[in-house]
Length: 201
Image (cartoon, rainbow, N blue to C red):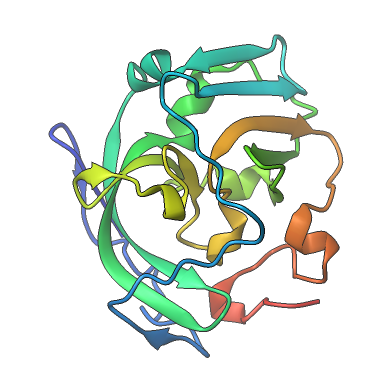
């Protein structure tokens, strides 16, 4: 993964010091659509994003407000728990580590639950979310993120299996204690590290 934008370039971190293809994965140039349930239809004029929980004050953004936040493009790999990986796509949006600069997070916040249109949820430790490459994505390879892949906005977590980034994201809940998200409640591992093959509990 390489962080790229007009103002910054940080080379040499795309494999995190590990093999590029995690164990048990097969490289593909296809981008299969895997979704549980119906695909929500959200227009950017209707989209909103909220943070709540262990924060000093709740905040909410419209699409236009969110587009005013610092924008970054990363080159990163996508690893699906169903054993396929795509490599070196370009993802543009707001890095989580940049977003939190605009949120007054309480020191008691240790975990983050992602919430999405349609009811999907997934959980991560806040330390995982603070990885330098976790990004809320609206643009994929220079074009608006397709609705089937989570557009208009999804979370992308390159160092974790892809289910750990919610498609159609509309909020983040900061928590003191961990709580299982949708797939975690259905037997998937919480850490979801592809290089450790943390797929199913």
